[in-house]
Image (cartoon, rainbow, N blue to C red; front, side, top):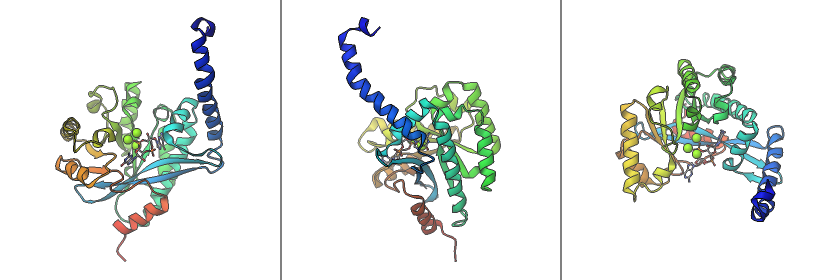
Length: 282
Ligand code: C2E
Ligand code: MG
Ligand code: MG
Ligand code: MG
């Protein structure tokens, strides 16, 4: 078959594809051992309510530091973990670690903070997911409302009937569901009313040029007004400036997340932030 396609295809394969495959295999093998070797950690990015003017929770984001490969970004290793199935044990580690951290916040504040965890579509289709979540919430004596699950539109489109019943089960438990990267998927908007959702996370691509680009502003405005009508909460991702924050508040967006309010930080720094912002009175 390679012969039929000719010399150019063959050359392309030996150079770029081979380098790509080599990196892929290297990362996959390294990732297999990452949990046992303690190379994974979570950082926590704060979320701020524009209406209540206070810290409302953190999104847990996975970090991988390999002794030789150095820092590998989730943008590179998550897709790889999804294809190899490694995202299942990885996702389980993330859920356990994030909920253990959330339990520690209980000692610092009486505020009902949420910890948001990203769910890969592969995890979303895994039969044991609900059992795992139940067990972990119980192990840490947390109410379901302490956990927000971030799913993408793509998780819902593949098998809408399965997705709908899983989301119903989540809602029945009291778990919160946010749609991540909202506005970048290709799914029909009809899923917004069919599925049990709580929140839309407006993708950062619409926020970046919000001040200068009238089209982006129109899109953000439309998302917020649609969310209001459907009784969904809104949070804008990737908010980097005070001007973006002010405009989002004016447009009626409920919350923000981004470098302006806070970058993803180590667990200890997040705890300090909670004590500083919402600490119990002595
Ligand atoms: P995401 O869930 O949409 O997370 C937001 C990403 O935007 C994070 O990148 C965050 O560091 C970055 N970000 C936050 N604020 C700003 C800002 O103001 N400006 C800019 N330019 N970027 C900002 P990160 O940590 O590299 O994660 C990338 C993606 O990897 C995530 O996108 C998520 O899809 C995935 N990911 C991360 N952790 C996990 C995980 O534990 N499980 C799964 N399944 N996916 C994960
Ligand atoms: Mg996310
Ligand atoms: Mg996002
Ligand atoms: Mg993203």
